[in-house]
Length: 410
Image 1 (cartoon, rainbow, N blue to C red):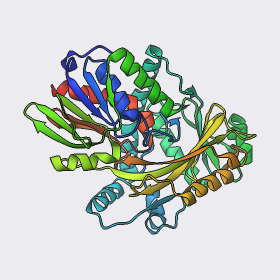
Image 2: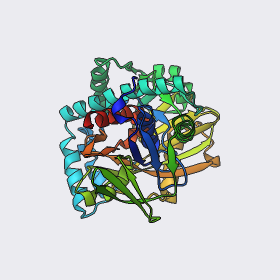
Image 3: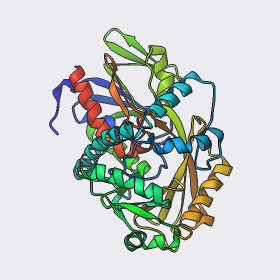
Image 4: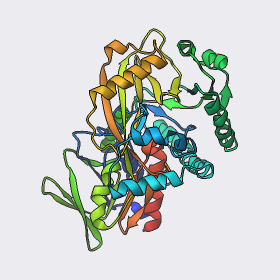
């Protein structure tokens, strides 16, 4: 990637130091911008990026809103679905987001939105490869391949159309029988009732927190990026040709440009500026446990229970559950138990479920289309947020797209 000089020397605040914010800082610093990362947490990737599903899903970019949502709607709205539910409220933003989400739950829009994100994911894979060639980072990264396992013949049949759609766009992905799936991943011998699977051999895994800490070290050492942690931004104010960033510590810093990468916190920060972003919190959970006697080496997605299994060295990361409009990051003990029980039922010997090392909950920032918001919001102010379940996957490509937005805005 050639340096684009219009950003050189521009004092730039990147607010949010998750994987998206760090990737954005990297893309801008490489182009000569003077970058200052600001985050409310004690270190990088302490929010939604910290312990997510660990899967880099470059092929599986299926939009969350699709025709299947209509069948799930009663369970979603009335809490009958153990895996996918919503906290109903009278909040106007919740209704706006929900109606827009349902408008996107058609076959045509689902295909369009899936392909939009697929293009970004493919670009992101290329940027990740280029980063690791330039700056090797140790974060348990490997190409593991992925099996999306279906337990419903109807759902497996529906998956065929999406596979064919993505194959036409150069994706290596195909349908396999239960026997073929078990041949690819013997750990699936513990699963019962499989209708079939979708196999994506080029999918990868990695520890997002280790990636983030490694990238931050490189940013500081090689690109003179500054980072301020334990600093909660309370307001953004335009000051002539510059932007003021106000924090809870009563500090005010002035920048030439600001990029907001704060996920679900963006709405609070941007609303006083008259900027609305269609982002909804979808709470998810994960736990990390020692590998069991039949731990998979291939990434596994159980589409029925809505779980993902990813092997990270000697540990297994299991992530799942989706709670729409839930804004509290506190892990609820009952929901952690639900996740462990679901995982045990799915792959009984994948992990040592009695020795869970850690559990976590995070808020995924989801748009109605499942595509992130990457745009200039006003002169000197840009947005890179709303990556939903795929922030880890899309971070590097989104950062490049954001850099292009700022380049053309100059």
